Length: 289
Image (cartoon, rainbow, N blue to C red; front, side, top):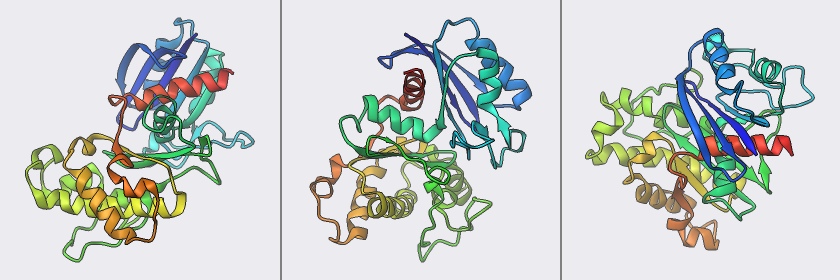
């Protein structure tokens, strides 16, 4: 079967055609501009591709409650042109096919659960560390939704005693996204992360903050696997620093086979940065079936 996938990011939109095996047959990328500019381009790409369903993984917050009047909307996003925008409704109206919908990070978690590191496990989380920080949660064999959806990139952290940086999140002075996202690294150190690869102190502080969030997720969600992706996590020296800090923070309280084998518990993304678009393909398949 032919399936469409839309990974709707705050900076760019990735549009793809795939099949039920997760194979990507065609892909394009367009900038995320206003809905008036961007959505007609999305519709034009998918219009004559003979896809049977479309999966959308979107930046958020979004409304995932199918009983809600605003299901399928991007809601209170700081990208004001997209606030309260019915992305599912507008695309579905034109394409007239089933549309699966979730957050971009939940889609990435689904990609990892279907074809990647979380495959075969009943639970796992995918954390993206890049322009923002987001957490997709796959729990008991399905994606986690509740009152809203996980916004765990905004968990509140204890600041390092030496850190005077004010954070970049407009909502919280000490949340994970505000202290450890790509923009926070650049603003704190006055250079982009890629230019700081040899600065040990940069990555020790980054690991200090990411490990706090991860320890909180372990204690609240108890996932079987933790997958870290996004641009910042291309700095592979972060992984041993994070693992060491997580063990230190747990302080022996959680004793499981996974924590004992921490190198295989906290792992890099496994699908060549395709976990999001592959998860969108799976969202389409699930909606169709």
